[in-house]
Amino acid sequence: MRAWGRRTIAVAAVGFWYLCYLYLTLPDVRPLVAGNPTTTAFIARRVAEAREAGRDLKPQQRWVAYARISPQLKRAVLVAEDSAFWQHDGLDFEQIRESFEYNLERGEFARGASTITQQLAKNLYLSPARNPLRKLREVMIARRLEAVLSKRRILEVYLNVIEWGDGVFGAEAAARAHFGAGAAGLGAEQSALLAAAIINP
Figure 1: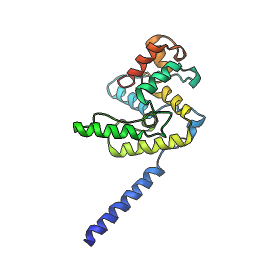
Figure 2 (figure 1 turned 180 degrees about the vertical axis):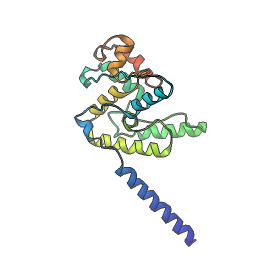
Figure 3 (figure 1 turned 30 degrees about the horizontal axis):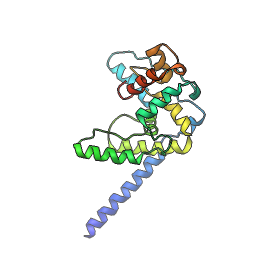
Figure 4 (figure 1 turned 90 degrees about the horizontal axis):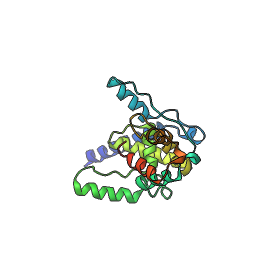
């Protein structure tokens, strides 16, 4: 019994120190308050994948301010990706519960519950790998993003960095690549098509 107790304490101590390590090695998100990221982990990954496949991928991305993105596109993305975005603090616990029950019924990881803030954390700093440690880092970064940035800024950065096609990143590049117009002029139908393409660009 004593050996089991010592083992439990040792595991708990290792877990605590690992959480401390994770927290201390999280990226500093404060530069995002006033500055735009020049690249993301996902962009770097796509470029590396293309290079490994013998292709030369030149990412298309043109940053636009929040006010220069169609309200129709913002609305469509929120409906498709995170309808509770303005209400939650980075984690949508209702969606987490529903996804857990859905996945439990099917016996597989078929549905996620990532918020836009979590997706932004993953896009900026992490890989798309599905493992618990990566997910834990995503949650911690998402909470940090919510603590430092306004909701409007989180959505602005998200809309400017997500992938909307092979080498096409951000709303402006996507609008120009797919519709030959800027992100400010997208209508309801175009916005719905782009929002639907986020899952499978």
